[in-house]
Image (cartoon, rainbow, N blue to C red; front, side, top):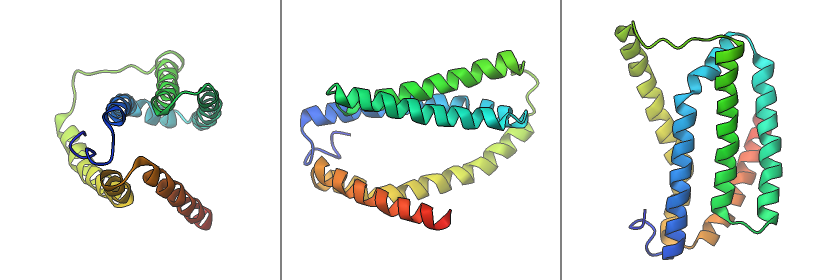
Amino acid sequence: LPSFFETSLTEEQVTSARTMFLIVLGNVWLTVLFNALSATIVAYQRFVLLRVLEMASRIVSTLALCAVLLAGHKAIAVVAVTATVNALIVIYKVVYALVKLKVRVRLGGTPWGEVFGILRFSSSIFIVVVVEFLYWKLDMVILGIMLSPAVVAVYAIGMSFNKYFMSFSTA
């Protein structure tokens, strides 16, 4: 991280970026690890629960982020709030699946042929997701390497308007 942004970020900003990266990495790890439980909840046709959780997480995140920003905290706190809300939602899904739906996780007797088939299929999807991420975010990474974070922030705001218009047009 420091070698990429040595010309555009101060040492303090690199430290903050590293901390935020670790928080986001832990959040992604937790989400991916327990993503199968979301699919299990869908399989039990509990669609309303997932929608309510999604709306609740957005409302709670928004309120918590407003409180954190009004208290004067910076970007690390924003990332931490978002990760905490996501972790609470994941924990709720785990408890709901294990207690209410009585889902049991079996690790023995795994059909490895099927697992490898799923991995072959999902690896191509993973590559598409990574390429799509690079396609949509590489410009911001290049701006972050070459210029200041303020330029990236202004550019990101402009791109979010573009995404809003694209999503409205396809809705």
